[in-house]
Length: 196
Image 1 (tube, rainbow, N blue to C red):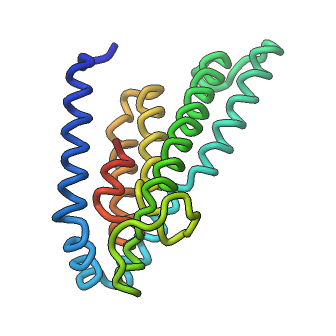
Image 2 (cartoon, one colour):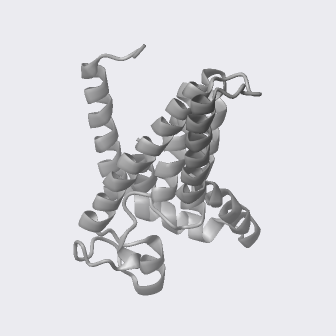
């Protein structure tokens, strides 16, 4: 059951786009400068570990394994020791895989077409802004954050599959998004857009 009407989703999307745009204009750079001055090396290193939870490859591998086990268990009529049918396991895994694939493609196209400079370029060379679209330069792929996208995609899918745990999953995804800011890998608008 969807709690929001299509108009509500459209308005939420527009509000997020405005927030990300306002952030890019007025908040991103001052926030990055403040983080650079204020965050200790120990905190930075701790958040490096947290950011690893946004690596999409791990989730894709686990979802693929669950999908295969679900299909094989369903075909062979195995009894599942977990309180879930093999059909549900296969469907949930397929939802995860398709969400990661479609969203990952959108993130990749946005990264290449927008070509936004990463915060490191500002701190090393004073460059803030956009580069040449589709240039494949790694320093110009800040928008949006793929780690944040992966963390929120996984959190939302797991929240659909296990609604009681949805806020825990979303909290972990928000922690990953925070790590991308603290580690100065992305700007605030990069993670806001990726989370959406």
